[in-house]
Amino acid sequence: MNISTLVSLFSPQNNCLLNKGETRLSLPQMPITGNVDSATKELFSDVTQIFGLNRSEKPGFGDSVARGLVVVHASVDNKAEEPLKQEGRVVCELTVTEEMLNGGGNIHGGCSAFLIDMCSTLSIMALTSKMNHVSQSLNIVYHSPATLGEKLRIVNTTMTVGARAMSARTEACNRIVLRESMLTEYVLADLERYQAPFGRVRGAY
Image 1: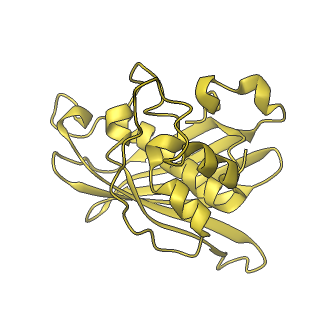
Image 2: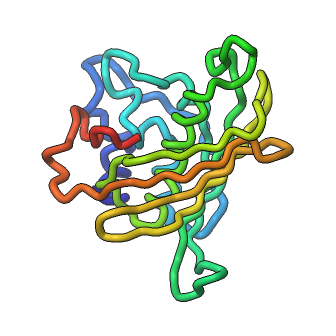
């Protein structure tokens, strides 16, 4: 499944995935900077649609958190250390809300992992234009907590993109780096076998 197919499926004109009588919600369109094509920017303008949210009768895990996530930058550039190779870079922003907090009043570690898993996947999508991969491992270092109302900037950059495995690194920060991580994803040879209802890949994030 490539970017053009996803944009077609999730466009406001395509309501085939909604229940009868429902209409797709229009979200405010935030300008996305960077050099990726217009189709990718259109797709990234609503993260909830990429991961299959808002398209079933029942809410899924993390739906309300994901709805607050905004992509502000998406680009593909030559690597500084390896000019013959390219890397995808996607920057997301999110404000910490009550439902994201643990008992101590800080963002929950599991919520951080959920956000990193999604956001790092976007950097891979920016480079490959495909969504035929699922998360395989996620290694996170927690440096400092984030509290209610803080605005997080989540910077995601691809590391390696191969035929069988892909990886990306992420830094989540406000004034300082709060989280660092590395995600590895496995490329599916048989996409249909792992297809979930509504066209989402099982385990995609």
